[in-house]
Image 1 (cartoon, rainbow, N blue to C red):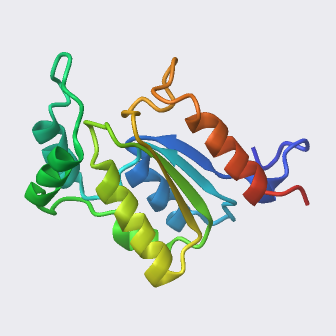
Image 2 (image 1 turned 90 degrees about the horizontal axis):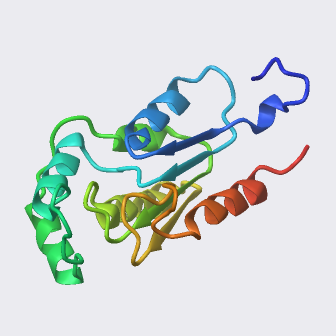
Length: 166
């Protein structure tokens, strides 16, 4: 892409979904070229084991599951144990702005815990991270149809604001 004359190489970034929460920070840190931004949907900022446990406890494979109440989400979060691949050291090393969008009804990843991790890094490490939680959406924020139609416009508006023409 960087070699195409119609593309400004200084404005190339990563857009990803779900497991991209582990892959994109690794790609950004390993990149030998400038990455302009990261834009992620339903992407975990927790360990691989926490994601697996969340999926099990939240009933990811359940037919017609009941909504995840705030109490249920908090109860599940208290049960999570960290182990496996941890993206936080990579997130700490990232130097590019990023946005993460989540649905509070996500049964695949602990959206609120991921959001809290990113907010903590924003406050304590000075990261240019933006987090948006959609209260009634689930993991399919970028599905067709999406679980919240505001997700993709939110990502695009953020990208347009943060990656300005040169």
